[in-house]
Length: 434
Image (cartoon, rainbow, N blue to C red; front, top):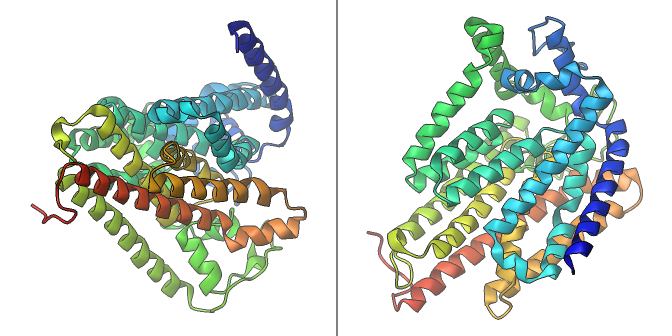
């Protein structure tokens, strides 16, 4: 393709994206909540977590004060202008995520077909994120940028971006134990410092005491008491939500927004508290198992080279693979994972695609088969007609099982890669821990 053709293609894509924005902003779901909360803030209210601060008890404001104050310039604008700017920013965040992925997994540049498979595997989640206008897209961009800086050993930048991601969406905090296993103490300390600084910054607006009270209210409203939101918000596609739907009775008729036409799929009727205990035990076991695997492999020398002085490309490849596992695990074992959260699967899917470039390796062939299954599920099932069919697919948790498939394939590939590296160095396959 010539340079002129590329420019014309980019211009055409830009025009299409700009025109699509007028369709998306007409039916945003979550951004109107942010805008209503921002207008309440500009009108002098400071009770951020009152039911009527945004759009009601279900569509309430659920972010720390920093998010609302940092985006204050948007709340001054008319809604249509602010919504379109939010859409443009969301498109740029998607482009940023794709750029980070292309640089993290350079092997993908060798195959346009693999990029197509990656797009089929994750595009439905990004389209949904644009439709919702949810801030999770911004948090995912910060998370990817943080991990990219981590791979480049830019700990301060990685910590600042990670702190922003955690502030917007608390879920990325589940990745911090991985950095502890890797002994990146400087990064962890910097994350703590940035988290404090970011969340204390709104004191300039609310006052220190007022901001502290708001943070306490946010904790009780969002973290400690989230049962109402779990029961009335989007279907929870984490392990916790999956266990509840399969092992206990879920009364959808109690949803206050009358969105109750979900079929019951449970084959047991255990008390919810026992199901939640089972989730906590299994989730803790999964995290402990993966972190133990990462720690063990970190202690065993790699093929012919030591980890401290090995080639940067080799180190970056192993770390990016481990991070892919951790992202899947974060979505799998976290307390709450809605469907749009699976935009984070772009990193794990791209990781598998980079492995699939080598069709001669066993893990490459396995990665390709896994990708094709994921691409088929995520591109065909959303097209099945009928709201009742889509609701059934949602409560059955196909996204949950896709995530399970991805984490299984990634763990298998990670273990296989470490074994192959040790075999190349002539070391025994089993080696005592030092």
